[in-house]
Each structure stands twice: as structure tokens, then as C-alpha cells.
Image (cartoon, rainbow, N blue to C red; front, top):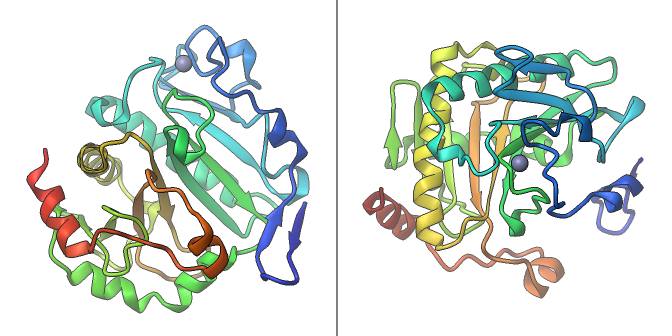
Length: 278
Ligand SMILES: [Zn+2]
């Protein structure tokens, strides 16, 4: 159930099931052989003997007419890290991302689909096994509306000095970095849409994210990060981008009371440091 707080104007999703979420359970429900601990799969790739498995989140933030919440387990291996996945594995992960993004986008009430990934305790991840999540909303979230309105800022970002660059994508430290060592990966073609990326473009994007995640983990000296895919809502135009948000810092009174984020690392300095790391 969504409620807008009349004072702050922020939207709250009340979800009692979230409190029942196990934190680092003894038996990992995302491991191969533990499929019985999760809802049945809606997609398994490349086949039933899966390398990537998607199922409805057992403790959803949204459900029913309000939307859908799915988990994408990216590897059958409990300790297999995203940054070490093979190209073959990345191709399966991207196929799952794209197929389920399309499926949720075409849901009856879906107005926006959010694809994201949390890794590490400070990111809010309750299970350390590599996974991503998809959430469909019956409205376009405020943050996305703001991005659509301010999307000219992305044109400045994409012109900035590159951290890493490939044929289709460019990684930069955005001028308005909210977190130390934040990295933004932008599509070079401003009209490219996530839904229409080819498999090789998708693999190139994820391989670039692997390089970024490796650097970010080293730079902040902690494993915690969040990845947010920013795809334009259906019928809207916006340059596609992905933010890698290092999560070592915790929000305190300045952030919560003033709405001001404190970042100790200027993007120019972050770029220099991240460039020097492999
Ligand atoms: Zn596991």
C-alpha cells in the first residue's frame, strides 16, 4: 500500500511482509538445490537446470494490483561474485533482465519498472548470494519524474571525462555525485532503449559494470554497493543510464534533517583514484 506523507511529500510503501524477511538465513534460499525455499520460478536460464533463476519475491515491497516484485538470482554459486562472472553468465543475466523487464512493463497497472541490485549489508541486501530485483509500480515514482524533467544534466555527464568507455557506453563520475566514488554509466546513443539492447550490447554493459564494481569496492575499501538501472518509462524519452552507488556511508542527521547529502570525495578526485585502480 502506497501512502504519500503529507509533510515531506515522500511516498511510503507499507509492506508488513518485509519484516518477516530472513537476514542471512542458515540455508541460503538462492543456492542451487534450495529451490523449494522460494516461490516457483517464472524464468530459468538456459533451462530448468538453471544458471539464472527468477521468481516472485516471497517478501514483496509491492504485490497484487499495486505491482510485482521479483528476484533474479544471477548465479547458482553462493560465493560467485558478479564482477567475476563469465561472458556466458553475463549473457544469461542480461537475457533475464530484459525478459522480465518486458514482462513486468506489460503488466496491467504497471507505469514504471525499477531494476536494481543491492550488495553487502549496508546496501540493505539481506542475502549475500548475488541477485537483482525488479519492481513494477502503478505510477511513475517522483525520483523518475524529476530525472525526466532534469534530463539535460545527463547531456553534461555524457560529455565528461571517461572512467571507462566502450562502443556503446561511457562511465563517468557525475558532477552531482551523491556518494563518494559514485559512477554513472550512460548509453552513448541518447535514443537507445534498454528494452531494445542487443545481447552483445547488454553483455558489454554488464562487463563495464563489472569493471566499475571492482574499482568502487577497492576505492571505498568496503563491498557494499547499489546499482540502479534508469530506463525511461514507456512512452517517455530519456538517455539510458545506470548508477553505481557505493554504500559505505550511512545517512545521518544532515541527510535526514536537511535533505543534504555529505560527500567527502569530489567527482574529479574520485575519477582520478578510480582510474588508477584495476
Ligand atoms: Zn546461496
